[in-house]
Amino acid sequence: MAFEEIYLGPGTSEPLPSLVYPSIAGVKEPTSDGVLITPEVRRELGDLEEAGIDVRKVDVAPHFELPVDVQQEVDKQCEAIGRLPKREAFETLFDPNVHSAGATWAKLGKRAIALWALKRAGDPETHTIAPSIDPSVYDEPIFDGKSAHEVLTERHPRTAEAVKERYRAITTEPIEDRAFPRDARSAYLDFIASNGFNYLGSKDFLTGVLDSRAVDTRAIAAGQLALEHILGNPEDFSDKPLVTASLACGAAASMFELNELFAKNGYEIGKNVLVDNDPMALASAVALSRAYGMNDKADIHLQDIVGGRLTDYIEPHSVDIVDILGIVDYLPTTLKGYRAASNFIGKIVDIVRPGGIIVGANALLHRPQQDFFEKVWPTLQQRDPSEMVEIITDAGYSRDSIRVRVPQREGVYGVYGITVPREKSRYFSETRNQKLARKVLTLASKFNKY
Image (cartoon, rainbow, N blue to C red):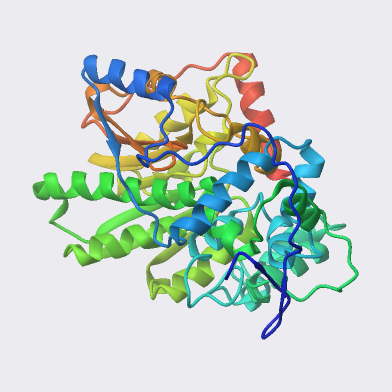
């Protein structure tokens, strides 16, 4: 899509007004070397390497990339949007008068299905915001005879219908923006006109925003870590088909891509254990498992992974690779003395076969476009690599079992591989306050609001 044209629907366009306005002061151009890892994170990686941790910056390309000039314009506008007040920033980026696809996406921007939309936005063959998901899956009786919509109605009777409509919209509406009334007032058009920027559509933003790319590259880096481990230890993983598990799986796109990676390298996948407490997310995972041709391997569990025991529904020491890419960012380090992140990572050892691997990620505390991130994305527990290493060792794993990777093109996530020891990790004794804190987290999960 040309910068100088505004998309108004198929076969129509309109030139952007040729006005000159002063740009927002201090907007930075993208770096020339393509490495966006901040100095603070670089120093931490150096310190961890000196301490004997396997640490690497990795050059991982996302599946889909914009032309260089379009990507540079996305980067500039995102930095400028980050300087706006929070409400104005959100309304500018997701202005329904212009960015109709972006506005539809934003209604579920904090839900798991939104990540799938970001991963596929740049695909030239993609025609809907969240492709390959048939919305009829939300009415299928996949949870003990109940549909995702029915479970959601039991939990949130006042909002269930509206939520279902949002899922229908994001899975059926075109990713290209709809035409808008010629006389409509547009926060986004005002923004670009008053700052000398070029027009961008929803597809450009959903593909090119730094965090969109980072969601993709963190999954690719995690897959590479897992494959590196499996290929390096063939004696442990050649006796039977691989069993994978995704905890807080969401739509499980990363797990299905991981399965494809293993299959291309000659490994058979026997079972995908998919666990989430959100029925709509888990139903989305069922739909994607069909799209990837893996429906016969899906073993789904609608469960709270924080408060309960994983072995209540997953066979002990049966899983080869565990994916926790989407959960640690939401767990506090401590809550009333309860080490939520460490205790969660620690108990995963109960389901992993000796010598297996856990792969996860956490948003970095020091990262580019922090202002934009805080204005647009959901609140996460951001942590730099040294803090994550401390959390992992506090969970009972040795430092030499940890591998750290940071995709350098974004500098947004730290990706972590944890080799599970052949002897079980230590257990935590819980005080009364810690048990109370765990119950608080469990209740928060059960009453998660849309």
